[in-house]
Amino acid sequence: MNRPDTAVPTDDFDPLATEDFDSAHAEYRQLRTRCPVAHSNAWNGFWALFRHADVVAVLKNPRLFITSVQNVVPKVAFTGRRPPLHLDPPEHTPYRQALNPFFTAAKMERLEPAVRRITGELLQEFIDAGGGDICSGFTHRYPGYIFAEFFNLPPDLGLAIREVTAIYDRALQEADDDLVRETSLQLYEVARRIIAMRKAEPLDPADDVTTALLQRRYRGALLPEDLVLGTIRQMIVVGMIAPSVFIGTMLLHLARHRELQDELRSRPELIPAALEEYLRLFTPYRGFARTARADVTIDGRRIQKDEPIALVYASANRDETVFPDSERFILNRPNISEHIAFGLGPHRCAGEPLARLMLRVTLEEFLARTHSFEPAGEVRMTRWPEWGTLAVPLSVTAA
Ligand code: HEM
Figure 1 (cartoon, rainbow, N blue to C red):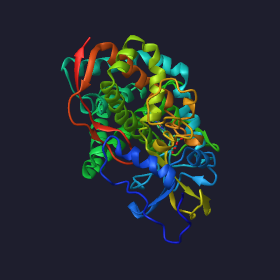
Figure 2 (figure 1 turned 90 degrees about the vertical axis):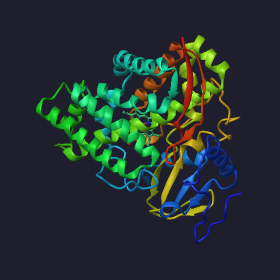
Figure 3 (figure 1 turned 135 degrees about the vertical axis):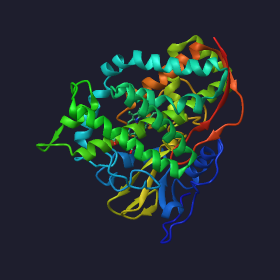
Figure 4 (figure 1 turned 60 degrees about the vertical axis):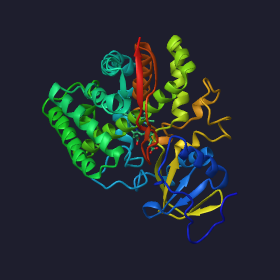
């Protein structure tokens, strides 16, 4: 039963509660039945949608539910507008038109050998050491290496992006706010240096995303340089956090399920299907936010214009009315394509093909280079608005 429409919003759940691996999903399971449109008093109050149908309905109506006011709960202190996530169509469109050609199947095929080399080298260090915490040993470091390749960076800038992203990522998840502020500014500085380099010496815009953004025109004018800067910065942050919290979670599940681990190791052709099920089950971006431009009623609850609404993708992907036996890992679910780990609508993840490439290659290389691996200590979880692991100790036997 949903709660009645009330003038004073209730405090239905606490996103700041300490969590273990299972607690958030156990609570969401209850909320989907008892209170699928919930209000929380945290961060000055916000609404949260927990059912798949409600989340999808909002994502399919971007004219009513906009992103430009607040794209996440809690609202992040503004260091500048960062397209494409902070803009609504039509202003959002030219940024996606500039980015999308860099994530085609052909582009991913060209990138794959470099991704495989980087992934293999980093994982081998971890394996040679007999394991350790996969998050600090691999996942927090990994995206920076991939970005250095994706942005065609020379060695000095490649090193800068690798160092800053690894520290920023960890600081964000450890809630070390001072370090987040400091490294956030450093990330802007890295993005500024990338832009200055491409302005001085442009590359072929078909091969270089920064050059393509700098040369893109919208309504006759070049895109404003501060928004190109914001776009680079946005891609780095949004493209770094999800893989880094998700990889540890997947590997923990495989460490705990030896039969599945052995099956995927001996039949790597099953890995893409396993990855898809992991994205559903362990959705790393718990949710992004929208703001309604008019008063709306969802499942009987009145949400006023301008109130923030978190769309809890992680809960929607375990909605048992869409995914039967939703808490279980089931390979080759017939309707797996209905998961919304990458969102839906105009803001659907721009980097989805690159994310899939990085994650698939990580699974392939880790399984191929190991004989077995198992849990080896206390797991720590990250926090809202991400869901996933911050520390996963593994002990590893090399192949
Ligand atoms: C496990 C990996 C990833 C997941 C689960 C993921 C998920 C998402 C989701 C759910 C959104 C939609 C935000 C919304 O609804 O408001 C999004 C947006 C975005 N993602 Fe990803 N992402 C991943 C990796 C990446 C990577 C590797 C990149 C690229 C370098 C990337 C680039 C972006 C960008 C640029 C946007 C903004 C799109 C827009 O506003 O039009 N993501 N991502």
